Length: 201
Ligand SMILES: [Zn+2]
Ligand SMILES: [Zn+2]
Image (tube, rainbow, N blue to C red):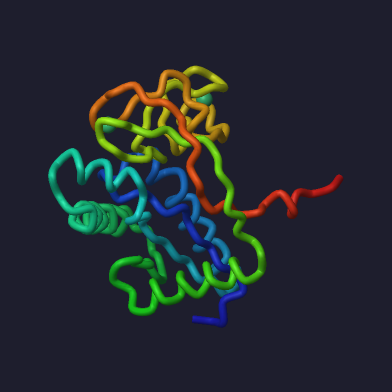
């Protein structure tokens, strides 16, 4: 392969379920077509994919089924990769956060670097909390209504309008595991200081 001048990376799919046609046709087929086009033009391309094995959706599915999160991720990652291969999606490399040697070391190095650069801010912000489960709820752990469009959503976002919001902003939030209504409490967390990169124009 020629020295790559283009790196095409697809959105990592949470490994809590099987691949859907929409997921296949959106990020994967489109990226594969682009990679093939660039190669036909003589350009060097590195085409990579991954699965989001540490997604909250994986943990929620594991808790519901009484399984380990790693076991759930491993099973669906294998199914997703097999379906992508059957569809002819030709990744050069599929990253595995569990299986790749050095991945966790690289991630710790990155977080330590961000902290040293002052990019991580410890802030206390509201986060839904389930008293019966004694658990802070983020991502797929909490469900409710999107504050923008009212569609059923979870703490990771809204599939109806795709506009971002904080998990504490869901309307009528309930715990995804026990269905108890939940309230937001102040929770200390680390935030990326992205605001400093906002385009001033
Ligand atoms: Zn919405
Ligand atoms: Zn609960």
